[in-house]
Amino acid sequence: GESVGLHLPTLSVQEGDNSIINCAYSNSASDYFIWYKQESGKGPQFIIDIRSNMDKRQGQRVTVLLNKTVKHLSLQIAATQPGDSAVYFCAENGRGAGNKLTFGGGTRVLVKP
Amino acid sequence: GAGVSQSPSNKVTEKGKDVELRCDPISGHTALYWYRQRLGQGLEFLIYFQGNSAPDKSGLPSDRFSAERTGESVSTLTIQRTQQEDSAVYLCASSSTSGSDTQYFGPGTRLTVL
Figure 1 (cartoon, chains in turn brown, purple):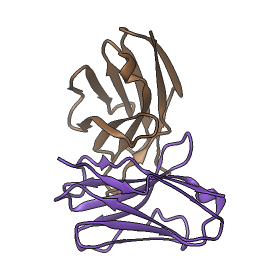
Figure 2 (tube, chains in turn green, purple; figure 1 turned 45 degrees about the vertical axis):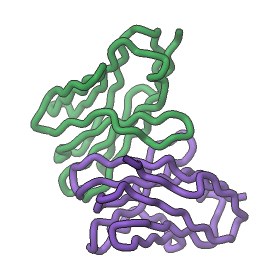
Figure 3 (tube, one colour; figure 1 turned 120 degrees about the horizontal axis):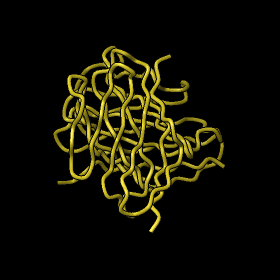
Figure 4 (cartoon, chains in turn purple, blue; figure 1 turned 30 degrees about the vertical axis):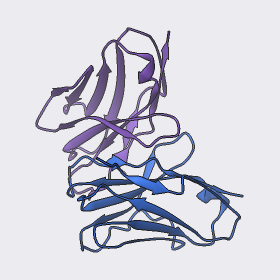
């Protein structure tokens, strides 16, 4: 079936460096994508979203890039900080998928001091 | 303003018992979702409520699982005759409307079935 997945299960990054988290999706009808951050013992926290009519969207220290040609989504975190250590999930809510989100398996980001 | 709240935060039960989990969505949010997250895994959709429409139950894993919602407020997820494989974190989310609107999550209820 259609799915959303991630390439890297764990990413170690030095404090101050940039982080890039990747996500592949298979539903070509997907039109809305979201990145969530989940810290231990907490629910997922919305970071940034992007619709399929855009290629790039920027937030505070975060940028999401969407490549519809290869069905790839990435989250870039600038100047990674210790508080960025968490599991990051991409999710999609495509046309025909109803209103439920389909989540990837998650990438753990570990920030080294 | 207040976010999504869930109770209890932790629940330990014995195999075969029934459990009820509660979700209070953000005030004014018409859509409410339940997800399950097993240890170290992503989120699995369970059920979705939108206003007075019939809920989307397509993610419920068995007939032991059911959920109710009163109007556009509180929802309860009930698991009957719990099994060990039901152990997981159960997350609730709400959004202001259906479709491609941001879902805001509660902290979850961690269920442990002994």
